[in-house]
Structure formats: structure tokens, C-alpha cells
Amino acid sequence: MRGPDYRLCDQTVTVYHGIFGADGSFCCERRVLQGVHFDYTRDRAVDVSGSSPETGFLLVAPCRSPLPAWCEPLAFDGLENRTGRYTLAPGDKILPGVGPEISTRAQWAALTNRTADGLAVVKYVDAKWWQGHLCHVEAGGYRSDAPRRRRD
Figure: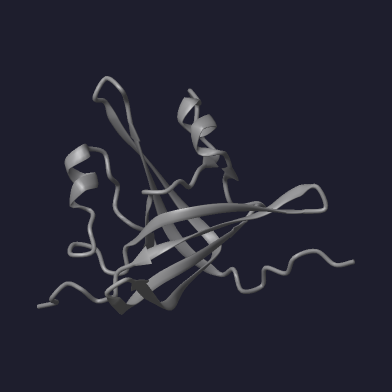
């Protein structure tokens, strides 16, 4: 039996994971992931008053080299050395391509769909297993419609 086929995983994204300490501290772990699949999804948000169009995303990050190793969010946040690892958690931000460095809480707050085309905000993360091994991680949520900024 063949394993998962990741030939469509040929894109690059930048993942931003904010870590907010109980003491008010903040750090942002930025990882550029190459060899992933990042795609728009079109859906409708439905509630008691009706429905409206919604743009979402699907990120598929295979668990293979050269990607960093994926780690559960709580375990990742507790690591002293996070080199060579990344995580995805609800509230994390994703940009297509290689995004800027984020080092302050103000920069984190300023990273919105009004300042960054195609920004995606993670709503869910789902680790997928194949024959007892972690094969890929999926994340989805809401994505801004690009372009949002006026280009002069």
C-alpha cells in the first residue's frame, strides 16, 4: 500500500506563532516552511440571520525534511531550544511566501489583513497519521481576500 502523495506541496509560507507569557512577556516564533500546500477555500458562513460568503484556507505541511519538525503547541511553548521545530495553534498567523520578522507585541498586533495581503489566521490544527507515523499537519481558518492594500 502506498503512502500519502505530496507532489502538490510546492509552496512556501511563513508561520507566526505568538507566545504570550503570564508575566506579560511576548515572543513570536517565525518559521518559513517550504514544500507545503496552501490554498484558498470558498465557503458560506451561516447563522440565524442568513449567510454570507467567506474565504478560508487549507495548509498541508508534510512531516518530512527539509521542513522543521512539527511539535504540539503546549510542548513547543515549553521548549528552551525551539530550533528545527515549529508549531501551529489557533490564533497563529500565516502569510504566503517569505514574510517579515516579528519581534514585538506591537508588530504582532499590526499584522492584520489590512497590512498584509493574503494573511490567514489559524482556526484549527489537525495532525494526520499514516500507519503509526505522523505524515502531515493540516491547518485551516480564515483568510483575507488579496489584495487588501492599495498599491501606489
